[in-house]
Amino acid sequence: MKALKNIVLTALFTLMASSPALASTAGRVDNSGFIVWAFLGFCALIVVAQLVPALMVMLGIVKAVASPKELAQQKNH
Image 1 (tube, rainbow, N blue to C red):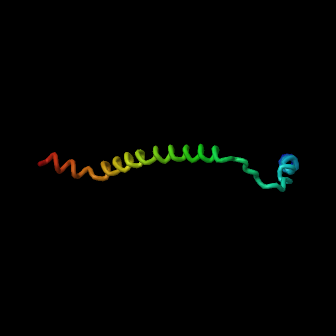
Image 2 (image 1 turned 180 degrees about the vertical axis):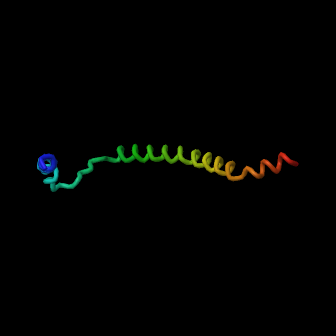
Image 3 (image 1 turned 135 degrees about the horizontal axis):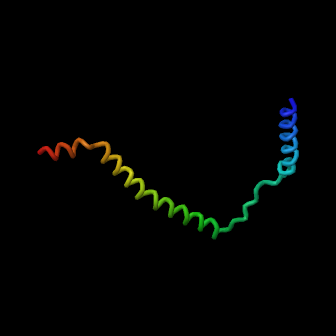
């Protein structure tokens, strides 16, 4: 019973300590200018450019694994 009391009190004190963070009424203010958004867009462009070759390699691997019968037939002839 004492352990349960300690757990409840710990949870209560934790919630009381975090209540000032919940008191904020202002929304998030985003002061990012054009340069920041251009930089983020450039980073996204780099990520997408890296994904295209990676997907092509993965599709090639799947195709090679999915069709081993063609190689066996070519070796027999």
